[in-house]
Image (cartoon, rainbow, N blue to C red):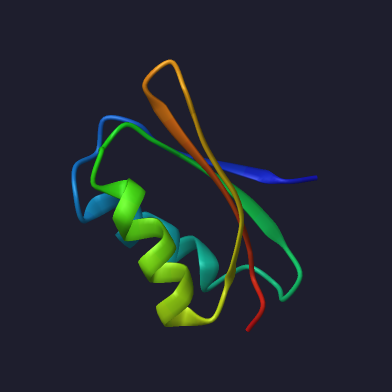
Length: 74
């Protein structure tokens, strides 16, 4: 089961802040789906994944909502 983190309506940097907070309690191998409406997340989420060593499994947009599936690797 993939947990969903709804960060719609939050502006930068809050989607990343919420994501980082959630990642602290996740186990290696767990995945999360982040939902965001902030256009800045298109750059922020991949950069965060690269910086933290986690995997951006999928990134897509549906009806103005940016959806990211991220796997915890560390």
